[in-house]
Image (cartoon, rainbow, N blue to C red; front, side):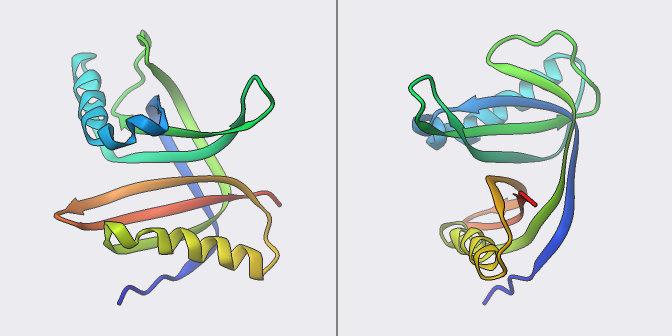
Length: 154
């Protein structure tokens, strides 16, 4: 049984990040999109660095309603200056003051790590911004190791 221990004030820092936004319908193709990002980084003369990262959040659309925002991110060994769509490039993303948990277990039960972070925030009256970053450290068969960061709003 996985042990899910929470840290309260972790910082997520990413450098030279290639980003692409996914629609909810494209989520099933995330592995292919991640491979395409790796190939894109290599085609620009750099190497991918570290694991892929998934951002989940909410944003207001033109109708004033909230939409789910899903982004795949991949760090590179250097900053790519000339980026073509559908990609964006950020030199640094720094997310301070996060609730953090490491999950190791079956992919289909990973939601319990998110649930534990949300429940802890609720029980301890910690406001959250509503977004999360999942850093996928290892994926083999149906097992995953991931670091999950949820940004605090306080």
